[in-house]
Length: 499
Image (cartoon, rainbow, N blue to C red; front, side):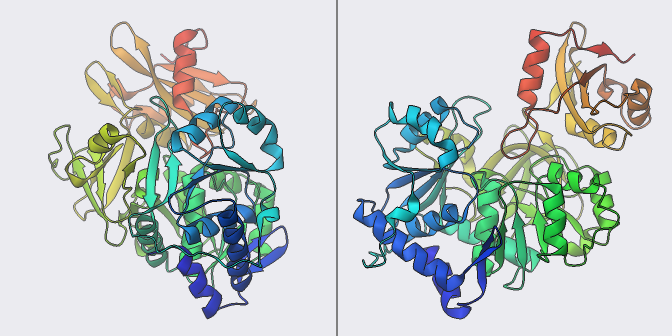
């Protein structure tokens, strides 16, 4: 199996159809195949061969996709690098992966000047200069479990770990998503968030697998996204909740022509029911999903037919996938009880790069231990409760911040909401609500009222923090709660009692 053969198939099947649309220009499937052939030949001339790692530190651009396909043709491996990393963090990933080449765009060249001083690696600043259309491509017959990517996790509990995602895992993930969403060559799918983030990378692969057009954008600009629907006739937007919420809150939301938009899907963070209903009210089925880097961004997805009847559910496993809910001893919990979400299937990673102990722990028993908490209903539908590491214990009882955040998402004036646990002399930990309102007044009584009749007393927030600036977020758009909590532990003065 080689993922590059999928692009070769579409180059024969629909040579003139658009594979990638970028900045008003199109790259057809036949052009993509020819361009990646020339690039693969140039990489081979530089010594890149089967198993070599190529690190990519670049913003969204067609060359990001092209170097991936070219690498697959040679059996080489792409290592995406977070564009927000410091030089020290970039150097760590490049060295840990043992990359022999680093592709970098002009905007990030200064960071790589520092990386070069500590890491021996070929640096490529102009990918186009490598293309050699006059040389043949030494195609590699890769195995199913050969790495296609090494994607580094965010490193919330130490140094980032490189998840080995294989030709098989991304083929299975892409097939699962394509079938769940009925993706086809007729679709035009927007990608406004980073390719270096596994979710962005996966969306490129889902388009690649299904023959759809990837409408690649440099960033998530709400005005531009409306233009994509109205002018480019984009059919699908799959994004973290904050991006879709920006659309709902935009002045164009009520009047924009969204008739081309047939698929809306969100995940990667808690999806408020208010957001789901707001999109569905505009006639767009809004689905929720659950995945993580270690499962090639494929885990579960809510079937379209259940968009209204199972609001809040992350759905059923993708094709060939399985899901369980287990206790701390890996035993199944009763239906409806909360436990850790475990996944299995061909979309799961091969393991962590050079981390046998972490691999054995995370994949023990043949199941991917996600570190996320959830429950299954009587029909087998998954409901995500929270991250294990975000859960707090107040007076010996579990409190799930995401449960509180979902309730507060509907409070007027709150632009962003996060709940973290802060130290408490009596209860050990207690919930604190952190909000950003963009200068609008915040009514503490409204926050308490939203929680009072729904949450047990021990779950109700005890403190409020009003921020003057938006929440810190990672590249995937998730709020960095560990930073918020660390700041409050270091300086608790912003905590205002709610009762």
